Image (cartoon, rainbow, N blue to C red; front, side):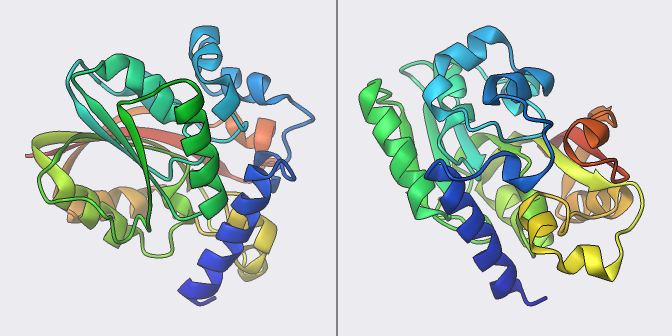
Length: 248
């Protein structure tokens, strides 16, 4: 399937989710609430309460928990959605820091901006953009985070090249993402629900890690959650992989 078509599928699905017409990226979440989903993938009650308006029950981990975010940091969120991770990170960086969220879905950006305005999150900014071509200056970011989004991008090498470009020397990227433990069939690869549900475009774990390394990063694997397959992905052989990648 052509890259443009994949992006259209993803954009349309997440537009619907932003409008409240979809759940769990179309994966099987066993009728769990957004709060239950978020708690199951590593968010505390405090995290959820801080940004409940932005919690759409999406993701496969909690990059704000594994990320070593500190006061004054400039943090970039790839595929920020309604801003859930951005608002949690905003409390960590304080007034001295800044959070930038990037998303290609207009409805998600609008929703995130409305929530930021409602709660006076003055250190958070949302920009329309493609994570394969970031609207962000070179060497300007301390920490990049991303939660179950890079698997949706057709050109994942370009995403990591862009992350490397915008990070300062010594900067780090913290990612939770879906990777495959066994390859999909051609039919699964072409299935629009699986594409928008973080599976159809996912890579085998070793291929994913190779792309990160080839972009120049030094990788540390932080966790591998295989249980998520049964809870959210109908037993498809996959896992949620959380990594720290450093720009030396």
